Length: 522
Image 1 (spheres, rainbow, N blue to C red):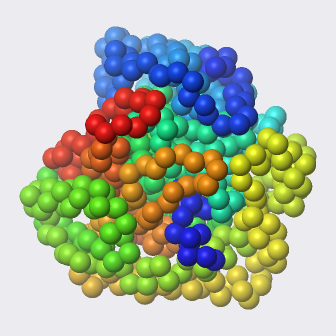
Image 2: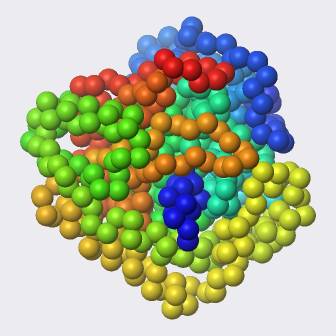
């Protein structure tokens, strides 16, 4: 793998709205006119708790909340390109949940709350699950992914499916994050000519733009935390296996996971609780940084963006002032030494995992294997490959079965260097509760010709190890969002949420987007 590929986007970021019909935008986004700044939208930046209070007092119903978000999507999304389709049954579902509330049957903190779901997660309704590709257009899964079933059981309203980097950004080495054949190029709501990162681009842009209360993304390496950073959100990449991964269009079972994306830590915690059946609300302590030992991973993760470095340095000062013990530096051993083996594992697992998904979750699809998808793309170049190709698909197709020694060696190397000799050593060496680093650079200009202008990121150690990682906003560089990652030990989500919440309450860093047609200095 080239150095450029190892350091950029292959996985790192790696009007039909009210009716729910498909939004097809061949050729990508063209921002013909400025978007209006809807500062008077009554639900802008509304939290789960605020909406629950409104429904509890009768000031709002789930139906009125969902209707308001659907109207906002219809007005603003034609230029943002964050939502592929909305749920035509959303208002009917909201009515049923309102009736339950009137009968004093409230399922929990997400009862009646609208949620947007990334379009690589299976939903059994009148919406499709396509990973943004026309190869799966028209295909409805036979049942909900377990995580979606959990959301429905918790009383959430699945409001729609979000755009993404097609096939979660595992198709090409020259991709533009947030582009899919079905959705075109997703834009960043802070400046429409800037990239929202990916691959959970649509979820990031939509939640930042107050198209719903909370959303679901997925990550193999960076695909939750990077768009969360680029869109000034809280993004939780959980421990591998904490959330059931069945029904997610796969890249690789050794790294894929879904996770919450939200405007506040409390909202992310509520959504994570619904996805896991655990209560994370007790972790939300504004004094949670007192006595916490937090390391700063400088080597490999600082230096590529002076703007990101400066904002994260200021955030570290906040951690220190709130009582944290800062261990600086606290570098992660072997970081950057397993990029090649990571890609090897992903390509092998993609070839094996995709046919298994298609057989179980898309039995009506014409494509049955990765080879079928490659052939479909080749036969439909004008819509599927107008800007970049499918080099990574072709490389994956050349791989053998998971019994190959090359795969087994690469997987063993990944686990040894990222876990046993990597993060485990870093946490034990300094008795750390978390490690922080810049999540990535400020969002770059979208470039469909050359692909992502990727500078650097800190997602890989946690992604390869299968350990949790939470992005929090830390401010704005010339008006563009920057985030910081809290990386933790396996199953330490409660600790990370506590630390992130305490930082958020002390710094209050988030600002709503302004939908600038083009970036200009703030």
